[in-house]
Figure 1 (cartoon, rainbow, N blue to C red):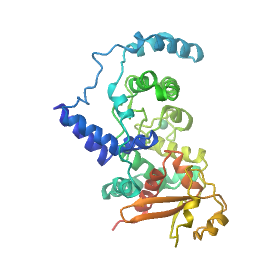
Figure 2: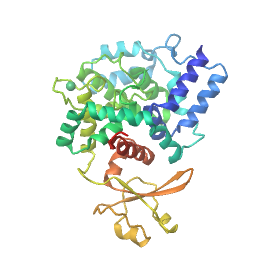
Figure 3: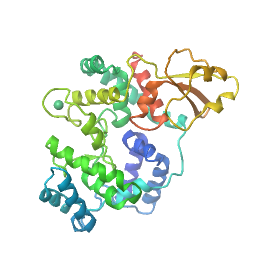
Figure 4: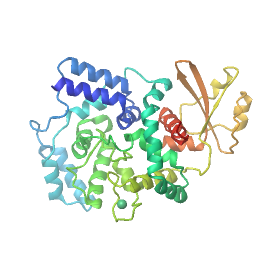
Length: 360
Ligand SMILES: [Ca+2]
């Protein structure tokens, strides 16, 4: 039932995996656009997602550019040429990855729709559970990195539904496909491919066994390879950084990621404001980076209750009931370092607030 499989994967896409949605936004490829693509595929008889294209395609080792990549990588790093040849001989192009990264952006979700996807009762309830079960580790992470338990939990909840949906695409083949068969982002993915190979060697992992999102975001917190190498930590002290199995490593690594990106302990995140007129609109900026001083906001009659000396940003979010206006503080910007989207940061923040409330 290939069509059914495809449809199922589409429905899963809508109901849960932030990992995929996240990629939708960070790679400028809205979820609904992809959903529509999926539905068109399934209506047409589709392709079997579960058994994607490995049998008929040529291996990457047969390609001249891959051979030069291997030679170059073996000379620039301490990765062994024969090992690389063996790996690339075992993998081929993943058409599904190309389809997913290049499907057209037909519909963009507004804040109201995006919020609905992530602020469901189940995700909130499981977040409270996660917070309770991991209270000690989360407290330790807060002591060491200054990042509150509910923010770490919300990231994990939005990314993979607390580790349940970590992605099933073969990471090496996906990265090779994006590096060698997707020219618009080949530079970035070639670099990630090398990072991935180095990571596998450093952590003693079999590159052919590792799975992740189609863009090879991996483990419970969905770190891409370069982030894994740079920011993952061994928080349970067993000598390995394991973002698949060790909840302690996952919590410590997310906290470390935030600390390294400048999270301000006890700092404000975001506050809704209620302007009386539209004058604020001249302060809206494309960039996520905070650039506004309190005086500039006050000039347009925006006076958040939260006092912060650091620069702020102003957000205008669409919902079914009209526009909302929010002031984003420095920590809001830090959340967007995890995924470059203000909607993502809003979802993480609101989920963190919800799971922090006591039940009932
Ligand atoms: Ca560990």
